[in-house]
Length: 217
Image (cartoon, rainbow, N blue to C red; front, side, top):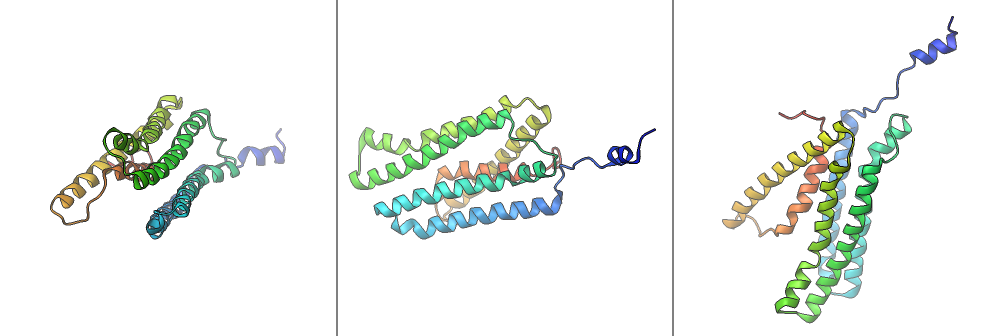
């Protein structure tokens, strides 16, 4: 005969991994606030980027906010682990972080160096091409890391969620970029640089990961 303690243990509810709509709304609001603070800080410091101190401050700001975004993105996993329903970072995500973070830090360094050199030396010809393309190279490696994640993922459900978020992010980015392109062509909005497409896609991808698989038809 089972004891009362054994019965209680058997009937105890399993740890829940569900965080609720309220949590995800607050989490999304926090991520949006972080992006807004990031954009506002860069806008405020932009006039000082001509000086060495301004460039160093700009690089420090980008690095600090990047780490902040990573921290906010990891909050759901931390809460799940504290509830006993989560697990430590799995190997596919460890490989992703080992690929992605060095690429982004290299991007920050090369971007600051390229801006500084271009303003000081005003290069032309092939040198100007090389300086301009240098910051894009680590971004290409970051994109490679993003698209290798579902390849490394061995959980079918998680892989499906990743591909679903990539699809929604791509669709949303295409819609926004197409609309902004026409508005720009008719001079309705200020000119928008093409490099913003990747950060925009990343934001949409993060938001799409909050949605249950197949929730949007």
